[in-house]
Image (cartoon, rainbow, N blue to C red; front, side, top):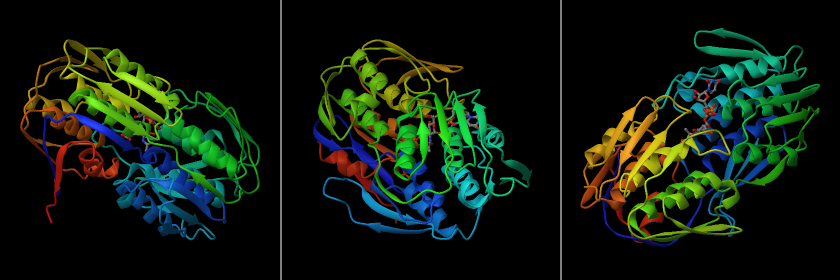
Length: 427
Ligand code: EPZ
């Protein structure tokens, strides 16, 4: 297994191009199943999960071809075409490794009138149930049966009749599955208390480009008038707001000034507000955000929440930065039940963090010390990278396959702005 080795203490200066958003790409790819025409996605990040999803699409009969990048894109171009869907099954060995595979449920139901998808099981940050996905699809007329760890869904007579569903808890994935099932329903679907993340907006905009009829995009109530068929489209994946926020936390921890090229400030207001409160200087243009900082961050209080609140996917990265603050911070994780796996690893580097239930008290220290640490999940691994960039001495981060799921060419991007960082391949 590869390791990333960092010799910390260098300030970060220069510019980083932000890749296409992983969490948007993973819901745009299954849209290819909704039509027999080609869906071309631009600015796709080069990430393990994207390749994994392409493999799943191939198993379902959808062809995928990767082209080079366009000059204006950092990411790749992929054309996916499901001329004929030859399977409606997403097997356990795929779904357990990549939870986002569950997002083929809605599109397969919409296109084929049936789907058999493995229950994903839990992961490091929580048990991650899919009950809301299933309740939403049932409300739209799907008939579900569970057997041997699989859910089998089918629409009476093929297409879903349509209906209304109010999400009791905001769920990004359940909203995405419901939208993709609804766009080809026989009738109209109304989803209330739907997730409003920018990735949901990206999904809706792509579906509209494919001929879907969706009202209320960006709001918590979506009204979707089902259509008989959707056509192909070419769509550019939005920039990754979590990647951008992660590098902003890195420069806050090390000092310096980084221009995040491609980042959209209007999709990151809660993150930017928190950075400014912690002492950052932030200059936003239409398509970039410049984050500068000198000295230690200030301690702040943060609580994660569904968008437009402070993103749970930013919690671990802020914690690493705030471990160096001149003051105490309080972070509360309201979305997942076990998203503090980075705390013991940060403590090994000298961080002073106390977890009490859903909250963590972070007492800033004036320096961290490099150490061998282990990544446990995607965002936890980025918090260890951030700590290593600021720490005195050498940090070896192991199990970086977690990192490779969400950060494209991380060492290259960080080395280009002054970090002393390298990947040691384990062969
Ligand atoms: C998406 O996960 C993201 N993943 C996550 O990013 C992100 O943390 C999360 O949304 C919240 O923003 C992708 O988009 C691929 P949820 P998702 O359904 O859809 C509970 C990363 O680091 N819930 O909004 O799985 C759930 O347990 C990843 O990039 C149910 O109870 O998240 C959680 O407590 C990690 N029943 C809460 O809702 C359900 O049926 C929010 O989960 C579904 C979810």
